[in-house]
Amino acid sequence: MALFYKQIKFRFFKYIPIILLFFISLKGSSIVDLKIISINIHYILVYYWVLRSPQSLGYGFIFISGIITDVILGFPLGINALSLLIIAAVATYVRVVTVRITLINDWISFIPALLIANLVYFFSLYLSDFSVEYFYFFKNSIFTFIFYPILWIIFSLISKLSEY
Amino acid sequence: METSREDFGIVIRSALLKKGTKQRFSLFALVILSIALIFLETIDLKPLNYFRSFIKDTIYRGSMIITAPLKVFGNISSNTKEHFNLFESYEKLKKENKLLKNTISKSDFLELENTQLRKLIEEQTSSLKNFVSARVLIDKQSPYLNSFIINSGSNKNIKNGMAALSGENFIGRTVDVNFFSSRVLLVSDLNSKIPVIVEPLAYHAILSGHGKKVPTLDFLPEDHEIQNEDKVYTSGKEGIFSPGIPIGKVKIKKDLIQVLLFSDLNQVTFINIDLGKSVSSK
Image (cartoon, rainbow over all chains, first blue to last red; front, side):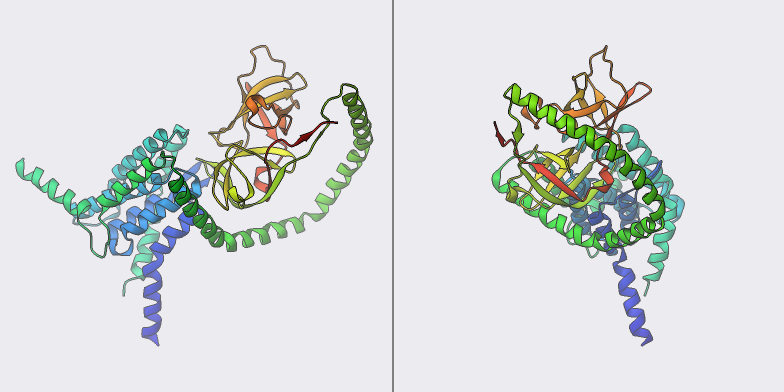
């Protein structure tokens, strides 16, 4: 019985990253806005799981999640998918070149991921004739970076719970 | 130096080109696919449009199902709040009712006078409204896009650029029409520019959204005399929308001329889409 319970718990927490990824996309809440604070939880989710536990989050799922976000938010297909894949690419690169995993390392390496992804996002929107508010873009990047450690701790707890 | 360049190449190859453990696709292939999709969006071909419509319709329905439990929970909490504020709203409604009763007699007289005057100049007096009603499936007001997804599309003869009304008031226009769903771009969106007329002085202007609740008036004449409470209607210029659809009233805040919308965009459940003119003359 205990083994059965353990197996269910393991399977549930194993699929949490995918469930969260698709829930965020289908609900269209990749960006959380709380008055002046604006955080892109989609970026943090993808970066953390690709960096720490790549077997939990396939690139194919990230791509589909990006396409769903594009449809829900009304952007041309491919824009969010591309920026999420760029986040995943930087995370994969960082995973290959680093040995020690610490919050500080992850946090600092998140800066180039965020910058490149937002740059690509911005240019894709610009080329698709979408007006964007530059200040909002900047604010979103800053708060996403600041809130990374909080979500890092939450995801680390989930990751520990999914260990068999 | 040579070795570090080689190392970099190996890392890039391993990270982007090779499939990772338990990965079915390489990152590089998916990035190329995303770029190809972005470029495909610019191509206007019928089979591609059908394919896009199918994908969008499917995703909208999926999103509706996923968000349904959350909506139910939200409704329960707002109902509870309303219940607690019952007495307060009753008092408010009582006052409003008194005011309305006073104004009804005035407006009846004005309507009668208006009809008689129109008859006198033999103008087209009755316009048969050609509306299609639709329900809001997804209410997505993100900082990037303020829009609604409605449950009617080309199956109900909706086309791109048609006016969307909440009751009788203008709130936006259709921008992305699929078979069974459409996207309505709200007047508050950053990409929304609507030609309007400001009454009573009949100034033409453009109503621009800013991604926030309140849109503003642009391109007004320099020496305009717009005042608070002036009414804003669609101008019908260039034949985009029918003229005279009410939008909101003016509120001047410092140098900005804001427009307070007649409809609360957070409370819209049903939308009327104006399919076009269907006018009969008397």
